[in-house]
Image (cartoon, rainbow, N blue to C red; front, side, top):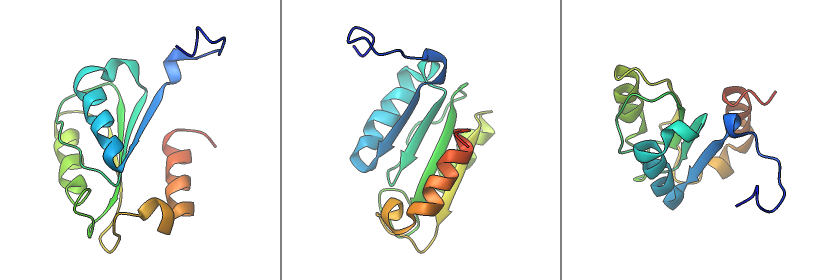
Length: 116
């Protein structure tokens, strides 16, 4: 759609970020369309897919967040399958890690997405 609108898209560098309820999109992408994304990121949401993929999976969340408290386990499961999964997790953080730890989260994303 964006290409039809005239935007130049480098399809080798597509990234998907699912925040909170948007994590459903991350799960669908990882389950069915992972070959289209360089990275798939979960922020304050759960990851319920375990598979080997060429996409790098970034998991960001907190231990006091019912939505993302499973991310450490998800990261380990993905890594055992041979997927590159990287975790940024704070046991004391709730659902708003992106807001409460904005600089830390952005630094993590910049580093892992190689934007620096």
